[in-house]
Length: 111
Image (cartoon, rainbow, N blue to C red; front, top):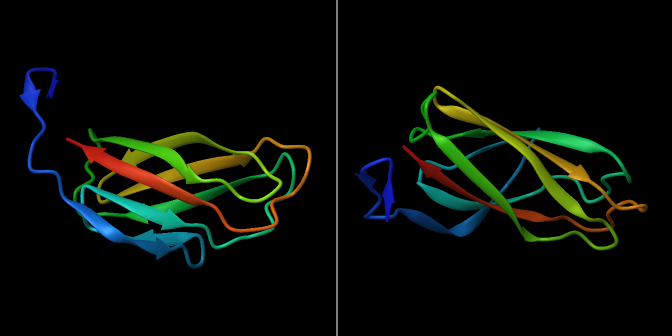
């Protein structure tokens, strides 16, 4: 795989999920899984998660997708904004009803 002339290889991914606590989680690998702290995200509500990660720079691409949806909700990743050593991930429950379980996200950091 090439990205702007740079090859992506030697992927580093954690196999266990990190549970978000106080709207934040720390995972220092290129890829990983985040499990939400909340299990009752209201319909139409959004929340932000701060991912602290030593691989993230201000020019990183932080790709985030929903790995497992919550029950009765519809989680959408709205944005993932990189900063030095962290990223802010914003998700939205786009359903007409509140979540009734946690959800999980998969992230991948490209530099």
